[in-house]
Image (cartoon, rainbow, N blue to C red; front, side, top):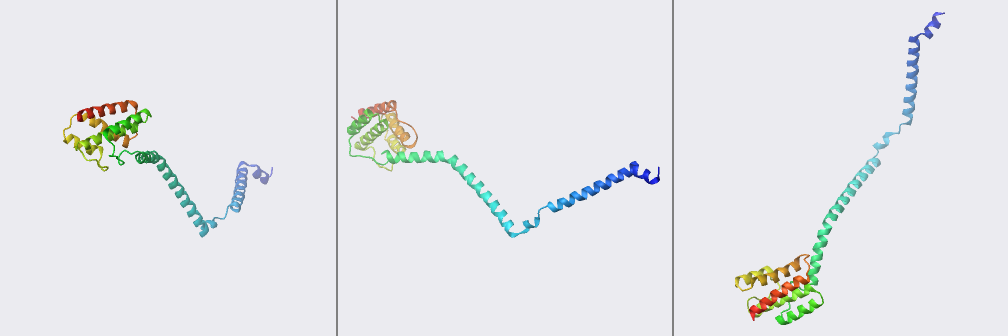
Length: 204
């Protein structure tokens, strides 16, 4: 066997050949990769930078709109409830549209008419107005649309009127019907009517 033939079949020669082939293959792959790599110099252009800014600001705007919508969803029930209370106050004659031209007996008659119609809310309002008219007729109070139920009740308390609890029931019921979702029932109407009769007896 010749020296040349021995060198080509030796283990060292084969390892060296494998390394050489791997190196050639690696250089070939790197050259392909370089040819296929996109030109990143495009990102240096002003147009690309402006486009990226627009996209970022758009994302921020979308996030802000979404957050605003979530806050609105949280607040909407409270706003609707507040608007409903305002509408009820506008539709109802409760605090401001006080009619003083009717006598206490007329108010009681109207209350019983509303009772027959199962409109207990308006019926209680009429009892309340009849009570105010009785107090006005006796010159215990002056009826003013600006006065609150609490102010009226304080005046009655200062006057040391008997049957204070009956007055308090009518005032507190009226206040609840005006400023909350409190609903009137036949039971509540009966209680208020009993209080009204107690007050009327006291004043007769």
